[in-house]
Image (cartoon, rainbow, N blue to C red):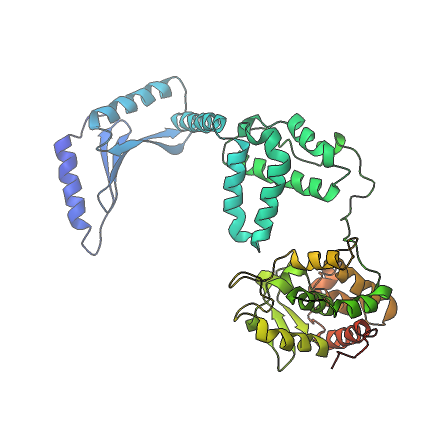
Length: 413
């Protein structure tokens, strides 16, 4: 087979020809052969790169040898000959190059620490997370617990012993934090493995691995937020109405709507139809990723009218900084000032759910929909097409009446 068919003069002439055709209606790619598997691949725009093409057990394969003219004709021939010599000893050039690339990535990993990889993973994931608080929680737990132990280690050097050392002190005392932290470390190590920065099993895997190395948990279910017994809620609301500040209205509104903290704090006026008495929370702000309509009781509407003169053009419950919502700690601090240190803001959702379950005859599905919960039965959820809006309107109206029942002057109307 002929070899060394090309010259620099022929190559330059072909490149000019292709560049001229690039402005025509039908530009074309080109493949210039030098012989015995060496080719110069030229694109429609005139850029060129070297390829070594060969057959391996009846399968066509190719290996890139570099761009032209950075890789000269002579240098390309030298590389091609080296690959022919390798083929003569039954070495697959493509597989060998892939192995070299893997080795290069592993060498890179030695200089890439767990902390560096974690920061890259967080930035990559940030657009998919619903709010900045999620990213902040990742950063805080890693900074407090993981970085002191493995933050400085090369990502490929993180082993089971180090992960166990991180988790053991908080596995039983701060179970929810520990389980989330373990999942975050596992995700970062998985990401690193996919990018060729580490090899082997994931040392943060729980099933069949860490579950045999960490203390057994008596109850692996979610830790519930401390809640106020519903019997005490009317007295609490009466006391709440004597407090000062925007947080007092935000907290009462949250209780009346059985909403999550972020749903209330991030609420904007554009989400409300005050004439129809409906608050529509977009799916981007919902935990389940589904739009949620909240029927507003008379008292909830009254709160909105009370705060409207003091709110911003955007946020219903504004904070101290311009164009910023109320701080996510504002309602928690209010509870502390009132002497309710043992309960949480989120716990009022449990207060509502216990009241609805024990003191009303509303169906399970209606109560769960009021909390924007997914039904535990996936099949039933798939067939459910109603959001029970009218039934929920009655439920929240009854709830508002109950909440106001100890107020000296009725504020329901």
